[in-house]
Image (cartoon, rainbow, N blue to C red; front, side, top):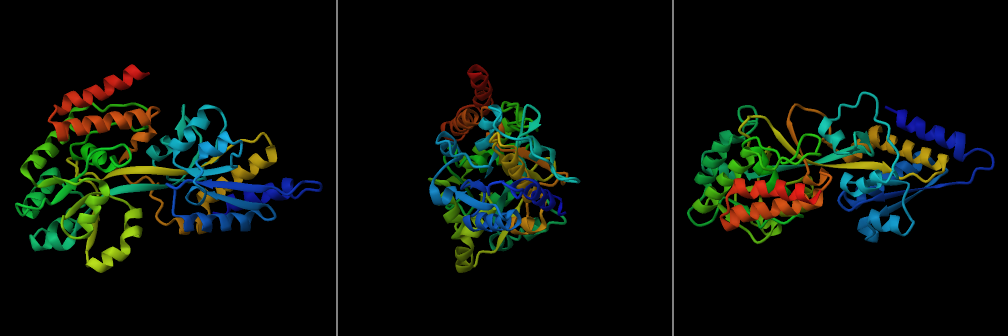
Length: 387
């Protein structure tokens, strides 16, 4: 358990603390998407304690507005970057990242590791995975005598028919039971997860490298959603923020894009409204839990200085396995558990383009009445043409 700590200490004792060696700073960049600022500060404090006499300089995007790209372009690249793989992948392609050491005995899901690989080689070490889920209003379901659906023992996962029955029972003829919002690349992940989960579709292969958006299962899910929209059980909000506000206010009973950050940000509102929140995996026709996840990892940017590179690699290993670090991070969500894992669209090499194309396809089917199969087929064709 202390292997990372010992490695970090060894680097310092053998190199940075040797006679004539200059004291070094360990610069650590943390992206805004990675974790709350307070968590980043706690991790930096732990690193500084273990890396003494080296000092740790925290560069938090939430404080500086600097992205990793901006720092690299200014020739101010950090030694260690904690961020999503999409932010670091460019530098892996250019050979600027070290291959990290995976802790002995790590039970990481293969999809989590694959999201951090480039050409089959690991370019960053996973620290945690943010999982999206479905959130429901327990009181609303109990009022409609649907509380049995919340029994995790008998209903660990809802089938699509059970979701449909719940939405029909919760729809009062005026206010929808659930809301979607216009698909945009930065707020579309929850809708993408639902479309893939319902009938066992997948926009990407398990390693995140191959687009398979035109699978029939995803098209069937899109048609199902369009039918529910036309029936009124599902409605439209102007934005994700508006849909979340309606859910927290008790106006809708189901929210499809719940993440840990939503709970942290909404705790006061939840207490104020008396909402009894229950989170569930996305409905699945296979009966298996489905994880839609986004990885946060630690990448080491090579400097050409053996001592500094070794220090950064030891720091990354320390973050990946130290018990206190894991306690600060909380539930890391990276261990294999037998569920179906759906990598974020951004894990694809053409992730930015793919996200835009998928949003266009979802919008075309759900808002403009286009054929789902045709719209998704167009995604694959456009992606192939762009290569």
